[in-house]
Length: 207
Image (cartoon, rainbow, N blue to C red; front, side):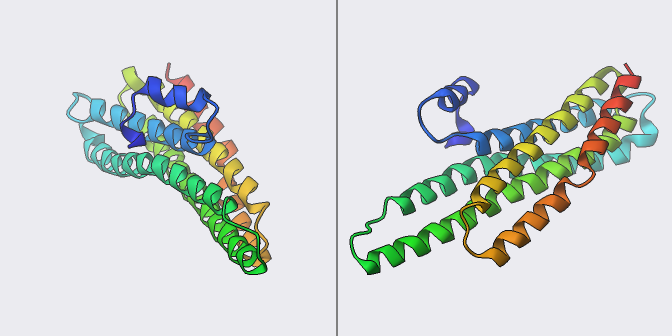
């Protein structure tokens, strides 16, 4: 499975003349790294002297970040699978009118799925950004820079996933579907630029 690849093998795959893994998988990896770093800061905070007052909250953050990490790791494979479906649909026969009709319907269905997969990734990455704030505020100071890296990784994942939503929406003929997904995405992006800078600034002030 793609999530079991070594870092070198994954990067080699990104660099190669193949379509997968690609930007969608990279977006999910970015988000997963952000979630993992939140877990790291939480783990260093739990049980440490001077942080007893925030231990329960750190445990809650850890539980949430681990769920996010798992979901985003799974999203790497989801991106590959849906891209393969899109490419397979474009490769369907188109000699007769019936074949053309079937092919067109499958392409549209595949593109819709290929829109929803990165949209879900964007949703998860937004959660990573939001979750990085409380751990940046209350996490152990000697690893607080990792909370800053977490928010940046989550933000990179969010904006990267957004690009994959936009490119697939462009090929969808169902205007109602396209408008709905575009609206959902814009809602996910709303306020994240400012929040990312706020959390980054908070972390930097503690260094």
